[in-house]
Length: 248
Image (cartoon, rainbow, N blue to C red; front, side, top):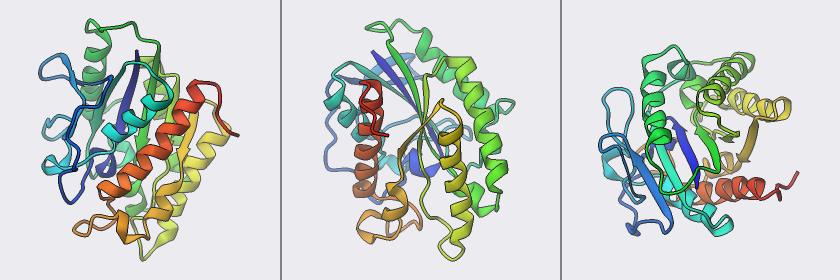
């Protein structure tokens, strides 16, 4: 069994304009829920609401998690458990290891890892989609990189994650794109200088300017169509890596 932890802010939480069409559980997949201390079928809507620390998919709408796991399983045909631990409008400092949010996310992840699993755990991965709030506050490339590495190191020490997968952030500050680009460069550099990181996709930047993939009611947020594309690209990359087929 592979465990994939999904973290980040609103685009990882899922802030889409409507409920996805396919609400069926993902075959061969589960979502771990802290409220029930149990593995449950993975389907929309995902996540759990723990105000103000962790958030479920906004208003019960869509998230990239089911599509990600569904595509991942098409390549790697194993049981997959997803852990959704994200919160909208959070900058990277709010995920630092000394924060209440990190401690609570740690509780949820540890609860998953120490609950009796239906199968032995083979791999543990983390998937990150975040950075919009740091672009808004104009955090520098170097500062974001330093904080990202510290966050990854904490996750590796606490949970034994094998790779920290990055879905590189897209554009959120449309009138001042250089703010977003500083975060993008930091995320690129992380993958270049630290082998614990894995760049899963950069397609978010392209989708940021295509209205077909955006939530028309929430600027800078992807709709279900956009999240499906992001999920497919990033899940394929992670699965290929696990199978030793990652393209350089």
